[in-house]
Image: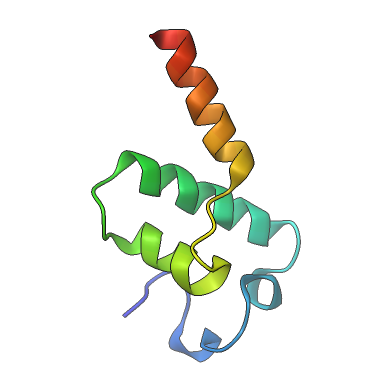
Length: 71
């Protein structure tokens, strides 16, 4: 059971559910949390279901840049 999106959201895209720009904010947030948490949690499932597993490239870029700056 998903606590982020109600079951009635099945079959609809994140854009249809949240609208712009919130659909991008959710993808970015789910990417961030998926990157810093254990595999298989809800964050990856949301990315899989609503974004075809695509992580937000700008969030990944930010994380990589931050990692290089702190290394």
